[in-house]
Amino acid sequence: MIFRRLTLLLAGLLLLAGPAFAQSTFETGFGGLGGESDEPIEIESDELEVRDQEGLAIFIGNVVVVQGESRMKTAQLTVHYDTENQETEDAAPAAQGPGGSQQISKLVATGGVVVTTKEQTATGNTGTVDMKTNMLELDGDVTLTQGQNVVNGNKLIVNLDTGHARVLSDSRVRVLLVPNSANQN
Image (cartoon, rainbow, N blue to C red; front, side, top):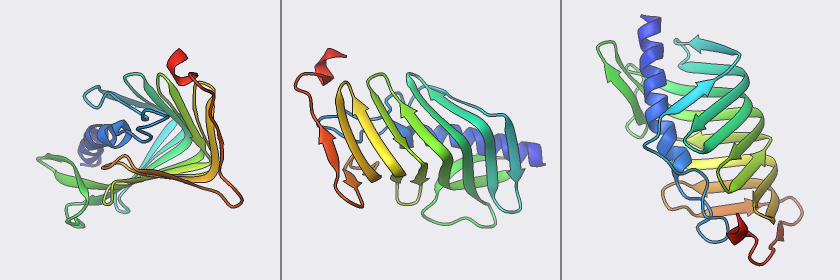
């Protein structure tokens, strides 16, 4: 039963995480993180712990998520999901099968997060994708790069539906723009 639920959860994670990471973030200047939402997603880690009663699947140690040319690396990825007894209206459906369905509500990456695409890299100490609001947040020492262009701050907030992004900082946001550097990649 747990194996069937885990299989359904992972299938749903693969279906839902793709569109979440594939949306455009910086439509001007950075061109977006992600891209191939139709591509399969592969997740590797040193360990996988499933806490079905708590609605958690935890990928531990050297976690690598790959979709097409996009890659995310982190120390730990926790998938929060609601089982059929805990479903909420706003959560994104993960998968449905004979054993019921799960709703993925949140993805949390900790221990350093690096998201790399063909032309861009985003880093932070932690990252969260809230499936109910379709918002992505990177927190702590956030850096976005494309070519020689760099944006630094403490927090990056992205609305994955609209592509609207906001960088916040405890002091000041720092931006370095090098003319024509984004076109050289």
